[in-house]
Length: 119
Length: 109
Image (cartoon, rainbow over the protein chains, first blue to last red):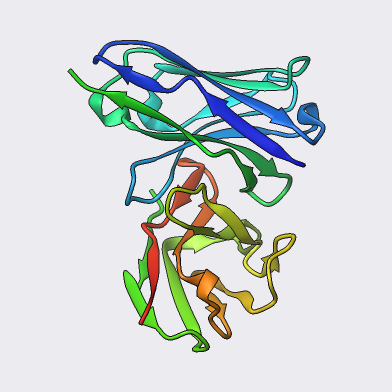
């Protein structure tokens, strides 16, 4: 079964750091671009970052402003999102998602992990 | 910046009825890069349609997508109880790379 499982979310103060992980199984992880997408409950999803198959190429949403880093370990089939200098507006459910090659969308999503930034 | 505006915000229909959901872009979108997702409470989005009209694996054929340029439509021909959910459109292009609409809530009347 194709599966993505996120972990690492939590409650932290503004200015803090957090590393999210996404464990992939059921498919050849190294063959796919991967994304992080976040969503405030009741709102539309917002794309955060993407990474190419070998991790050499990354892209970020403008609001990341150098605070987040996406990376991957193709041996451990795991995607990461290192988040620094967190703000209240970063509070959301964070999903990892697999890219559907050639179509600019995401065909497999994890269940999400919640990040809450509050003083 | 490209904005996707979905309408209506909420659509109330009976099971068995036809649902028509709209997604309008502020600038032209390539038909290859317009997708639709379904999201149920407490769940992640689920890809329904890629490339404007291509159903994802396992998606029933009562779901269909159409459109071009700035106007795109998701149609559900005969609503089943499990179809009542929130639907998002999404496009891919240059910065910002991936944009989602604000969603249409399809509720059972």
